[in-house]
Image 1: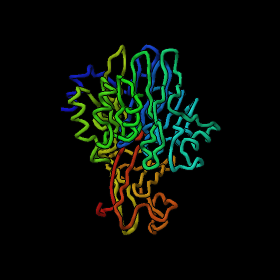
Image 2: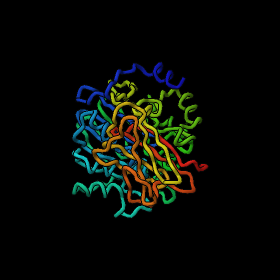
Image 3: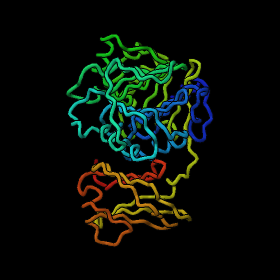
Image 4: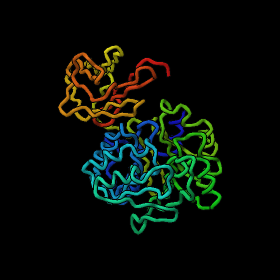
Length: 390
């Protein structure tokens, strides 16, 4: 019903096989949001320029880089970090270590309880020998004579919740306008409304993954968007998108897209004042039917099992462990043999394995832990856990 509402109310579904076509000056303005769980990673392309707003999780860095590759982006005019949460800055290091040219690194000048030396944006820019441009309300970044980013928040520092220090951007283009809101919650939202600085826009990126502690009816009415975008996954954050939010959007006749409802992501296209959503589909192998993960708590061995009749290259594949938040990229040249296995162990592992990692244990021994395997394009291939109660 939700998707039907989107397509009936919005517009035309644009056919996509490899994501939105690389934007040129006649293609309108495109905002692509990756389907990477409860996380933000958005690519904005307008008038031949490209900007990245947040970079998702560390474990989904490959999806971010694949998004850029699929859209022909070898040069970013700017990278924006909305605030210092892992699901927004996780891919920064991978981006900084890539061959993508970055002209500028932008972050909010207001943040809390983060030492400057440990700020993720400073670390990323430093890898390139560059510095961060710190943004405050009222600042403007020109895209062209017809387009610009305008910073409308944060107005004040929140010393209790970093979400309320989110960078709030209003993007005005020749095709229409977009508001990018990070994880702003009600406190920051009310401060902006009280200050009278909330502009109307065509597309609203809903704050804080559609949680019920953000996006009041007053804010929606002030912004009055033609369409809304929600970046979340219910399996990771069960209360998102909140029913109360979806009811508000329905009551105000605002069509919306949720990233989890799309294949690899959703493309929002602004053109001549109209808004359209379309599915991002990449023509890549689907390994989920043939690759399984199996844990042995006794031997502390993770086994990758291949039920297909073909070898699978694991170059660029990533293993993520939820409790430690550790990411391990498998060594170049690693192959999972046809109808075979590849075993990964740690220092605690005594039996022979294909790869022994220099960590005491891969997963927690007595508390719930989850392991996720991602392929080289950032697609989630397999998930398992240690069998402990959540």
